Every structure is written in C-alpha cells, then in structure tokens.
Length: 100
Image (cartoon, rainbow, N blue to C red; front, side, top):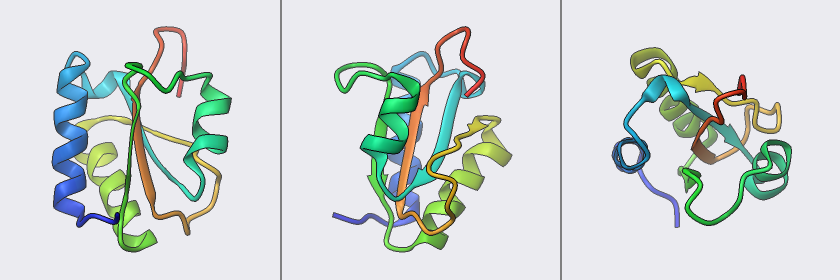
C-alpha cells in the first residue's frame, strides 16, 4: 500500500538506525521493480540484511524521499533501474567493499 513521503522517511530512518545508524554506509534509491533491480545486482538477501522497500504514491514523491536521504543525510544514491518513474523507495546497508 502506498505511503506518504513523511511516513517513508520515518520508516527508512528507523530502519537505518536499527542497522547501525550510519547514513553514509547506506544506499537509498528508487525503482519500479525492487526485486529484480535491487536485490539481484546487490546480492542482498531478503531476511535481516538491512534492506527496506516502501511504495510512494507517485514517482515524484519517491524521488523526493531519495533526495532527502542523499542530500540531507549523506546516503549514497542507489542506481535502481535507471528510470525516474519508479514509485518504490528502497534502502539498504552497503557491504564494506560495496560502492553502492
């Protein structure tokens, strides 16, 4: 179910804190299909790996959430699927050797 931007920001902030609280060690991006575009390229597991995904109402809202974390919190922008029309916002804790 889609959420408003403030709820997504709150969920992702709480989630990052749960996994150590280091925003600069986290990646936040947008995508249309989180499973194929986010999980597979980053080889993340779906259980207890620091990955969270939330659906925004619009692609613009999703981008605003991503931009909030990248600009204000210092997270690394995610590559996602390379499109700007995705409504899904994802975040995960990067592996130490993973650029994003």
